Length: 213
Image (tube, rainbow, N blue to C red):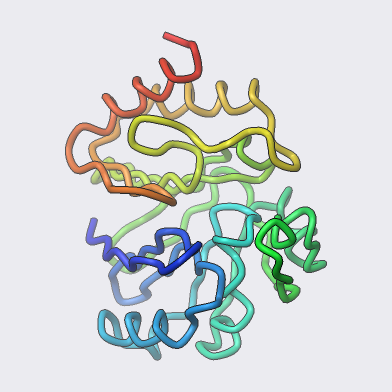
């Protein structure tokens, strides 16, 4: 799978473009660097073809730019159904925008469930529901290439926080176990460096970090 990395600035998360005739943008950052991100997108894919934005979870550093990008691109935004209401209301507590002393625009996002598949024309990304960091956290998995876009569920050497609104330690452990049962080649996380080639080792380390084996 061809995944293009869009580095964020400041508090922005990692963002990814998945190439194909119908490319997909995964996460949008805070929105504070909207014009820079839009320029980066235009340099990587034909901007008129980008019609799908997938949000891995509800937090401001991932969803803050979604409303503006949706309007500019004419794109449809998707998020797991359990996080959809919070972003739909622009809830400053639920999205944690208040933690950044910011507000977030309400996002008219379409709710999705585990098992939903996004097609780029070249690749298929299956939605995995991986709660724990937030109740509606998801990962996107390509069953052919074994690549995983992990949001804030798993990072290299660790996992996302579980002490934020709707976070749950036990749910996070179950989610990482779910990922551990997959064959994962590469991991593209919401923060920090990517892992190219030893994804299952990184997931095993994440389980150890959680006190599991």
